Image (tube, rainbow, N blue to C red; front, side, top):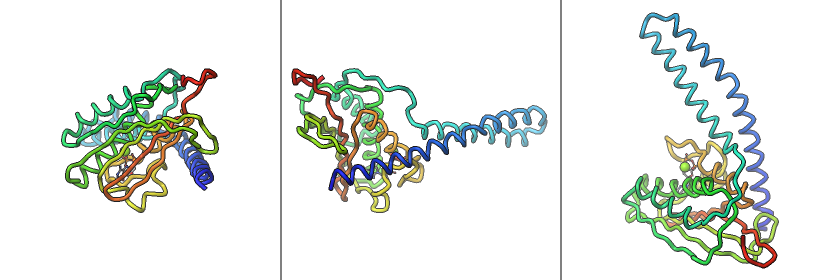
Length: 244
Ligand SMILES: Nc1ncnc2c1ncn2[C@@H]1O[C@H](COP(=O)(O)OP(=O)(O)O)[C@@H](O)[C@H]1O
Ligand SMILES: [Mg+2]
């Protein structure tokens, strides 16, 4: 059941991603023209009050372009280098503590976990997107004694999608905040789905595509007081049986 559920979810996410990318391209094309025309118009305007309007056009076009760029997602080829997952988590922890000093960020690491093969900066981005949501949710809900746990585990003989893997590295991001709103549970990983007024709704969809690029995926369980995201990444095993 879990396999078919995950497959259906992945297929739906892929469909949405293709749609979003197609739309993003179509939106992006005319933006250059609008921006150029506004700048030309600005040259002929003497009234500063009118120039204010052309400024607004240029600024809004730039904002839209940035939004569309982030919807197109990470477009560079990902690296395949050995990545120490604990180094990734320590970086994320430092960033979170700097942004939200009132949140306790605890570690629960399995130090025996071998390096994975992937792209370190992309992994930092993925974990950060997930963990930042947790910290934001706890701050917004004014959770008493907000706590985030960064946990690593090795999972043996683990099935991801339809494939069984000898060894999978699991990164858990666990918070004691309000939980994911019921109305978002099904569509959480879609682009532009957000529960926050100022949210872009792109964080989790970008994190999920990064995990897909590493042949992995993100799972989530949530109830009030306990929300757990698990980032699962298969480890490549060479013939000596050592993870590489
Ligand atoms: N740990 C969490 N606790 C509660 N809600 C969460 C958590 N993680 C994600 N969410 C919900 O999922 C939404 C989507 O997250 P995301 O894709 O990162 O977009 P954004 O952060 O821009 O809203 C968030 O707005 C929030 O409502
Ligand atoms: Mg977010």
